[in-house]
Image 1 (cartoon, one colour):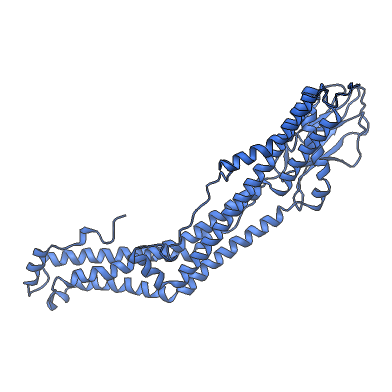
Image 2 (image 1 turned 60 degrees about the vertical axis):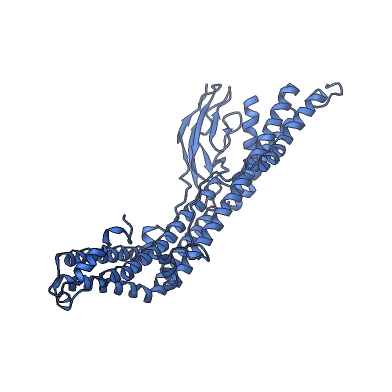
Length: 434
């Protein structure tokens, strides 16, 4: 009898248990107000250079005007990345709330046990509630889903950056083509000098750069389409992985057993250089001296031609490289999202039990939680072999009670996860007579 003092034995004990159960929501309210409850992950940020007022650089603004479809594609991808960041944040915060609720219920269970002197029905109910919140978090907010969104965000950031790199390279190349030529023109180059090979080579490299710029302008839509296809391939891969990670119908039906297993965990324990750099500048005195020459190219002119040629060729190479990156964006950014869920595995695939011994602990890894275990085929009597979850989704204890007998072993204990197409791992359990 409890002499009218209730399940805990004292009114103060009941108050302590109630305070423990309410601890989670109270703490969560305080943490949220202090901005401690937040997404701990560092999500990639994508710059949208062509957004209104985003850049004050003339070269970037020129690229945005000349390549409007590429700039639009980058802006769209940046928006998708931002949406994923918000989704991850919402899921993480919700998971933290569920974790805190589970912690509060587990604490309430411990308080009831300590002050009640044993595992009462009320304590069992709190343990079951803790198991239920744990199972709900595992079913609806698995960490693997956050990992998938993070992977997709990384890929989209890579795709968008490829487009941004193209815009930046276009702007720099255009600036080189536009700004370098007036400097050379100020030299007052004679017609005789213009017939020299060095001058012709320099002009040829300049023409190639302008041809590359013009070619990309004509390919604006095609390049934007490559970025868009890479984005769609990433989102498609993400959708497929998310579908594959949806809990199976059986997992919902087994949610009660999973909650009991989680509750059992509680109970068992109590039982480069600038393109406009100064290197290419020419002093006024040099210009004056060069303008006075009317014969073939002077050494100073030839030196400037070599520098200009190198600038044009370097700009062309860098620009073409950025174009090729966009062309190979589906490969370079790996638009296929890999599942973070590993194969379900057990530390021992076969065990032999002996009557009355403490038992054998099997460590389980991988799979989509919550996990469940059940006998398949011939099932042993509880007097012959039993299993319990020491740690939900992580450790199973197999034991043969005292007085057990060999029976029809070996038996098969199958561990299954909650995937739409469940992963399984079998343990062969052999019992023995005393």
